[in-house]
Image 1 (cartoon, helix red, strand yellow):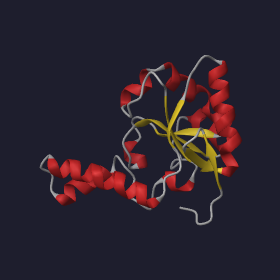
Image 2 (spheres, one colour):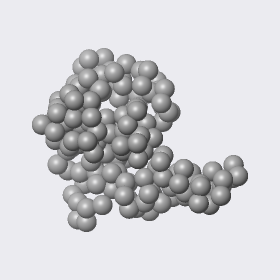
Image 3 (cartoon, one colour):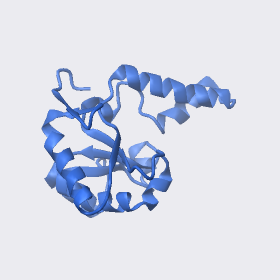
Length: 167
């Protein structure tokens, strides 16, 4: 989390770092012009919201019989530990489509996902947690999670098929 970050409201109930507002709008508009409807499902999250999300998932695993320690470890591969989430920066977006509204790997079978992977770098975004890179990122595959890194870095990262960590 960057203390004092300037946030701008976007698409009603979401906020992003003000520095990326126009990149987000331009990307969503370009997708729409190509016949792709994107839906933002998450952007900036404060630590309190991240803590609630994390604890809810951890408690879910405890309810399945995991120990507290194992539930925490499993949750940490799916939801960033509060205080460490990219969503705290206002630079991360979770994007789906009105016809696919589940944060599941099946999103990668949609036209929206294909469009995002092909075009996100033009607007400074990368697919943050690609499939097969879980050992590098420490997070599970998330085809809906895109992170702003700037156009030049995004084009290098996406062009090389690497992660932010590898870059």
